[in-house]
Length: 553
Image 1: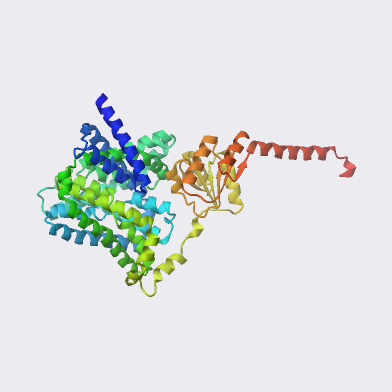
Image 2 (image 1 turned 180 degrees about the horizontal axis):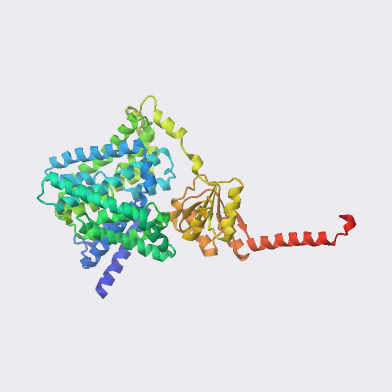
């Protein structure tokens, strides 16, 4: 046991160092994790011996990853996926699968391996793309909104692909009609079960669990891993079950709070998935797949953006918008590797397919990251050759920009809806301002929603939760959080999100005022001092009024 602990400690230290290098190179840490897995695996250092422990953590990591994906697919978001996102998403999926399958089959791969890898090439990394667009402050731009839309289509496709392939394992040897009927029956049962849970059971259970932040987190992980295990028993896969677990909570008011708390755990556990992946790869396996990986990487880096630009140009968008949106699919994602790894566990493909997919992932993620970061200079160089992707009258883009719902952003966001914060929010709302409140107490959140106040449930110190708020265009953020540490955490989270507006903080102690000013707070409110000043003014006015002779009144 001591040796296993030491091995884990060494792996974590190597991962931290590799992650620092990755950040310096402006690359996602995902690439660093894969490289670390290869380094500590049998291909180089051979440091991994605790295979069973790492494999268990890897499986939990995948369950949490799919749970978080499902958690982000709110029904309201799915209903509002625009036609361009659906058309672009389905068009890119179809193009990549069909031509990818043909290309891989021409390389001499079996039809099953060609199918798995072709499907894997269709998935783009939601995590990486949203992070890059957020850092560039383009998540609310037209191409950013379209990209997020077809990423949702891809996420749905991931789960359907996993459920379909896992159903093929359960019905090996069955005729195609029987397989389709079995899959349809199981999907129908799962859909009915999810509806009953989401409608009648989960809202009450989650509301009770949310009374404690720690309990809410434990419940989320238990629910995700529990349904993952049930999904496998039902003939699907752990991945599909975990996705449905997240999806079942996506419409609750506690979605953002759960997501913010799970993000760090997901990233930590995914490290072990890539360690486990690297420990199973050997240079002999990777060496045989170098040239196929080069060809498929070029296919993804060039072919996927071209099909997106073609579809968006046909639908009436400018070449610039199509180009910027197209760059977001010039990569494969962690789901691609998870999908092929699932194929190995089902006995459909061998380790060679995983090696090929991993190499394509390394190349495309690294290249597309720089392509997205430097998208505007890249567009300026390529613009003359992109005219074929634009109509003379890009009518849909003109309409999209004209109808953009900027009025949905609040004027002011108040963190903390206690006695002071809640009354402040209602007073400002009555004055005609558009107010959004944030609080991590579910009872308080429900109370103020009943008073027609827009309220988000979540922790103001969580950077990932802050990113989910509509901060763009918000002129003021007001914090009524109870202590200096909480306010420091909120200010750091706002700074990480590049918030440009003004900040007011309610301080309980006068000594905190100077500290908050140094941290960049625009205005510090002192309720006790203000209340005393008001009381002195009112009482002195009453006393002086009483002392005035009646003949002067």
